Image (cartoon, rainbow, N blue to C red):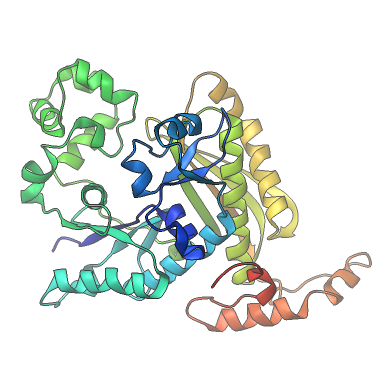
Amino acid sequence: MARVIMHIDLNAFFVRCEEIKNPELVGKPVLIGNTGRAGIVSTASYAARKMGCHSGQPMFQALEKCPKAIVIPGDHRFYSLMSQAFLAYLSRYSDKIEQASIDEAYVDMTAALTGVGDVEKELLSLQQGLYRETQLYCSIGIAPTKWLAKMGSDLKKPNGLTFVRKKDIEKIIYPLPIESFWGIGKKSAPRLRSMGIATIGDLGKRISSNDQALLSFFGKYYYQVKAELSGNSSDEVVSEEEDPKSIGNSETLLSDQTDESKIFPVIARLSESVSKRAKAQGLVGRGVTLSVKDTLFHLHSGSTMLGEDSNETRKINEAAIKIYEEKFAKSIENGMAIRLVGVSLTHLSDPKKANVQMSLWNYEQYEEMDKTKLLIADLNNKLDKPSLLKASDLKGKKK
């Protein structure tokens, strides 16, 4: 029996979070990002998109197209909180959830939908329930593989629901322009068009005929593309719960990057997110891993050990930056571009349960450890899903 994979994508997530905080923004052209010549649009509201604005666009160009747009720098702490609420909601339906980025996830729905008479009604109920509880909008793709599910969720926005079966690939996927192929970058699409490939169907037909020019163009990725177009690519949803030795988050960049000024803020956000999750679970770690994926989807990673167990944002971020500078900076200078960044805290332990050999100089540190944090950590350890935080950690945020 084929697996049922759901890709769920939060629509205009950053903008929607700002609308939740300030309902007066609803329906208005809103751009999330920084102003100035170097500013980039992170997310554009649907009203702004109608004016020609889009993610990854230089902010000054977006404002030329939509001068009345409201520009908001972004509240990434609030976005992270809303993302956690999103994942907590999904956990009611499945324990196999793979977070692809702050606003999207793959969910193995095989067990949840087995025996369900009206699958479409069930999924619409999931979609509507998410809105009722979080006020977030989403689009859903349902398919036997992760790639097809991702393609499906992109087809109808906002609030879409699309089923893509193997038998539907030629009907639904083949007519799409080659630029919409998830995994083919902006630089590759024009080169494929120059080879006479305007649609995904053109690509599929050429690959099915074992086109040697495409084999040379894609290299090893050729076989991955072939598997995706035949509906035989990965259907494995990798849940982080399967790896209790680490806590990690990753983020797909809005565009391929070689600029540290664009990459370092992402590392900082991921470090903060990992830190919050570790603290919520009452865990500390002794190691940090930084992973990057290049434009050919090759994954590169490096690790380092901290001087002591920690779950502090600053220490995680500093370690990740150190890995970047020592392991990846040279490759990027030589032309490697990054499309995804991931940060993980590794070698985890529970400081409350650990047998700590206290030396003279750190005894007072353990004596004065925040008793409230220890209590919260203890309660979270007894819950199926850690959900307790100190009220001060939510200061200035709407729940």
